[in-house]
Image 1 (cartoon, helix red, strand yellow):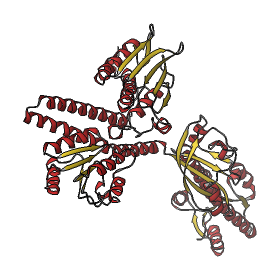
Image 2: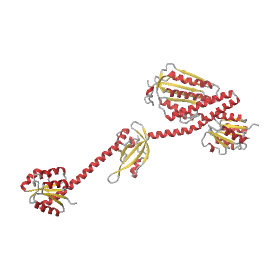
Image 3: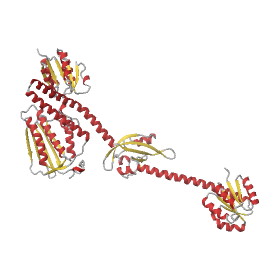
Image 4: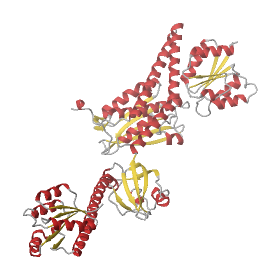
Length: 117
Length: 498
């Protein structure tokens, strides 16, 4: 069964990119453009991994992570932060990895592979 | 030091006796009994008093008169036989201090010597005072020059905060209002400032430094750095306070500009990183498409790369515009030509997104005096935002943007841009022209509308916004046909003229 990745980013260009990247590697990908949508999809699909942007309209990334952590069956889903903000590594301290935009494609795929396989 | 006395007398015995007497009176005395000696003594000795018989030799009288002319401080006591005294008085007049007949009365001689001493002291003191007066005059001139010419504002206030003196620069910018209250003259207030540095100096006698904003007689505001200093009277009490202010307006403006540049770059770095990531995405799609020989994917990828390159170019140009604060270059251009360029730029964009673009340009609009490059960019900016508003709106099936151009009056023209896109809430409407504010997330620079609004203002124009969430927006931009008098312009380089 394909591993599922949930991509959360308000920038369509970035989320399309991540979706194509992960799909080409054989993962099943769903995309959310904000925290509310992200929580909804996380609850519905129980992804194996979540990539999370920090700066989004409305609620921001760390808020998503807090809400995720309060769900007993979601709190252990690994989260990779992918953000253009400086200091992003401090935004979600329990993230398994934190990458800066523009990210290194190979590095990201290596991290994802290490988590999921 | 003992006073130096020269005795001129042909009668040596008489002169010797006199010398003895004078030395007993604690004077230093020398004798001349010939012309040669007289000349020697007059040329080489520092003399205070000369006791002389002017008729000792035929030349003595002339020597003495010439000497007195060049040494007015030396006192001359004439001794002569009674029969010669009248002639001596005629010759010497006031050049001699006293006239004593022979034989000399010792009492008279004592009085004459005492008078000579007093006169010499008086003259010495007068010289000293004159010298000091000259120094004072010189110092006063120097001070006046410094006061008037120093490149800062100087005013002097009394305890009631009335201006008692002001330098040229102060008078030039704030008026010659000596006697006026300082808070009225350059703060345009009716009461003293709360934390007045002048009052503080009167209170504690110390110098105080503050930064103030002052208003010139023409209504211009300046940032100044002010320092006060107490001026004390002879009793040591503070009689007045001097206020010295340096105009730092340009420094503050530069500082503000640098701070906002810094803020801008900080806030834009996130947006730039998003764009670069999207560009990476396009390149990835292109690589994948080439590898999979997927034409559709490659075609999409090219579109994405081009789109991102355009956005990055626009952002860089906006940064450069803001960093450079370029002045406007005015030209007279046909309205039809300018709006034609705008329509030509927007039409393909609207078509690409399936948005109806309605254009209505009134006939016979004639010419307009604008910076065409920036005015066209401004109108395109508003129209592109209208397209974006339609794209962000998921509720309506059909979207349209309209662009209407018509005369508002004989002197003004209006450009109306309307869309039925997502619309704006009150917060967005209030902040839309603010620096760094964007409703487009990482896609926006926060500079576009700020710059557009600034361009309209510099053209002497106005923007009216009407918008409601869900209903769309209407922008009405009105500018004068003629360049306003206070237009910010830059002369084109000489080679471009004509």
